[in-house]
Length: 406
Ligand SMILES: Cc1cc2nc3c(=O)[nH]c(=O)nc-3n(C[C@H](O)[C@H](O)[C@H](O)COP(=O)(O)OP(=O)(O)OC[C@H]3O[C@@H](n4cnc5c(N)ncnc54)[C@H](O)[C@@H]3O)c2cc1C
Image (tube, rainbow, N blue to C red; front, side, top):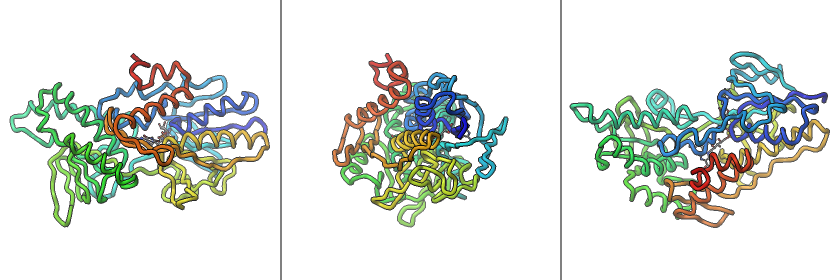
C-alpha cells in the first residue's frame, strides 16, 4: 500500500490512544494520518460524573488535542462527522468530505433512554463535557432560585437519578459530597435536599458481587441517598417523575432528573450500514468491521464478545484503551504486510467510587476493595493513563493527586 491515508474518527480514549500509538510506530513517509474530532480537546469520560456534580472542574478532565499529538505526523481536523460511507470510502464532515484507505471508528457512546416516557425531553444525561457542565449549572441555578420564590418549590431541591448502575452510583456518591457545599453557598438547609435513586432491578450494581452491592447500598443510604429498587420509571415531565413499584404509582416533584441507566454506540455507526449486533459494530477478533478489510472499530462503538461468558464486554475505558493499542498494531501490520493479532482483553478489575473517600472494587479477579482504597486505585489508574498520554508533565497538570497539581 503506497503511503495510505489513515483516518481516525473520534479523539476519546479509543481514538487518541490509537493516534498516539500510530504516531510512534509510523514515519510520516509511511502513512498520512488524520484525526477528526468535534471538539479541540480530548476528555476523560470516566470523570464526567464529578464534573456533573460540580466537584471537579471540566478543565481538569480535558486536554487540548494539539498539546499531545505531533502535528508533523498527525493532521488534526476539528469538525463533526455527519456520515460514514464504507462503500465509497468517504467520510462526510460538516465542512468537508474526506476519503480514506484505512478507517478507525472511535466515536463513543450516546444515551439510550426508554422511548415515550418523556425522558428524552425532560431528563439530563452525563454524555460529554457540555452535558455534564449543564447539569452542574442546573443544580446550582435551582438552589439559587429556592429563596427567590414566595411559594417554596421543593422540586428544586429533589434530585432524581434514574439507574443504579456504576454511573448512577458514582454520580450519587459525588453529589453526597458536593451538596453540603452548594447548600452553604445558597443558604439552603441540607435536610431539605433529597437525592433519590430509582433502580428497576432488585439491587443497585446488579453486575457486582453481593458483598460489594451491600457495602455500596449502606454507604449511600447512610449518607442520605434514598435508594428505591424494583422501581420502573413510567413518566417524566418538567416538574415530576412517576415510577411504579409493586403495582403502585408514586410521583416525585423534581426539576432535576438524571438518566444514567443506558448507553448505546454513536448512532452514526448504525446509519453507516455496517453490520451491527445490539446497536454496535459486531467486530472480528482483529477489531475489524465484518466485510470490510479497511475498517477498524474501537471502544463503545464495538461489540466484543467475551469468549468465556458468550456475552459482550461492558463498555469501559479500560477495555477501549487495550483495543486501541491492538488496532494501532494491526494497522501497522497491515501496511507492512505482517500478520494481524486477535484482541485478548486483560481485565484488571473494576472500581466504583462512592465519592472521593469511599468506594468498592474488585481487582485482579478476586481481591475486593472497600472504602478509601477504591478511589485511590482509580486515581492510580487515571494517573497511569495520563503518564502514557503525555508523560509526567501532563500527569502533574491534570492528575487527581493533590500533591501533583497543587
Ligand atoms: C460518568 C461515566 C463514568 C465512567 N467511569 C468509568 C470507569 O470508572 N472506568 C472505565 O473503564 N470506564 C468508565 N466509563 C466508560 C468509559 O468512559 C467509556 O467506555 C469510554 O469513554 C469509551 O471510549 P470511546 O473512545 O469509545 O468513546 P469516548 O470516550 O466517548 O470518545 C468519543 C469521542 O468521539 C467524539 N465524537 C463523538 N461524536 C462525534 C462526531 N459526530 N464527530 C466528531 N467527533 C465525535 C467525542 O467528542 C469524543 O472525543 C464511564 C463513563 C461515564 C459516562
